[in-house]
Length: 72
Image 1 (cartoon, rainbow, N blue to C red):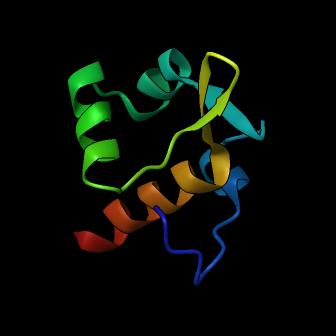
Image 2 (tube, one colour; image 1 turned 120 degrees about the vertical axis):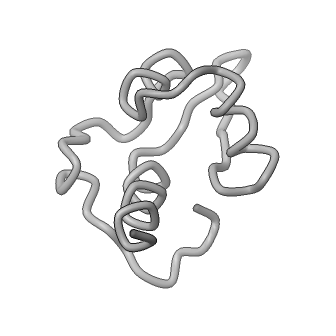
């Protein structure tokens, strides 16, 4: 999520690294590539780049998961 108003500890969701690749993110979220790119398009996740490598920060993944949890 792009809003950083509340910090969610990524370890709450078992995320132990600072950032994850696209394929790792797909596995973590149990979603397909199209859904991941839709989350990016809808600004629910913001990718980072190091060279040609696309990464997703654990803190952003944790915030996304927390928002899904609280929507129920």
